[in-house]
Image (tube, rainbow, N blue to C red; front, side):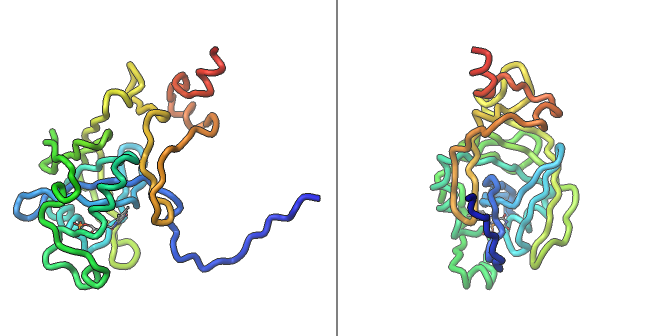
Length: 218
Ligand SMILES: Cc1cc2nc3c(=O)[nH]c(=O)nc-3n(C[C@H](O)[C@H](O)[C@H](O)COP(=O)(O)O)c2cc1C
């Protein structure tokens, strides 16, 4: 006899079911660069909504400068993300962050061993080590949650490592791109394709690069 599936009621402490890690780069008041890990980002068309705490230096920079670069992180950079985790570009360190052990760091690129790369449409630098870099303009800042905001940005320029672009198209190869995923505060990588998707057809994604299609064609 098949065992019944049991769902238990849980007062979940964390609702981070799994989202790609983004390094968001912005420009500080003094013109220097800031870079911070974040993972509350979702996409709709050419827009992205960023969930950000109001006390971060990134938030201040976004409100003042109205621009940023969203650098998508591969699993190999988990170590660099972890080096940035206890750091803030905000000085003095906001009280609640200080209580959690955050430290001020003026050179966060250097602290994480990351290389700034000049952008083309915005002043904030890209992260050279990230294979996908999206230059963005801030459209609107919405109040969201407690002490946080939803920052709506529009992608104005996308830079993608050549090996990740499906040849002759303007699509990222979904098999080639392996995002670092933050799931319940832990890092994951190595995503595999689990089957064909109707959404891919609707978006006219070339199926040819998917392993299943390649195997079917011999
Ligand atoms: C993997 C990871 C994911 C994070 N995701 C978010 C996020 O989605 N939103 C947010 O406000 N902070 C997030 N943080 C925390 C920020 O990185 C942290 O507040 C940092 O101090 C911001 O730097 P800043 O003050 O220099 O802007 C995340 C941190 C890590 C390590």
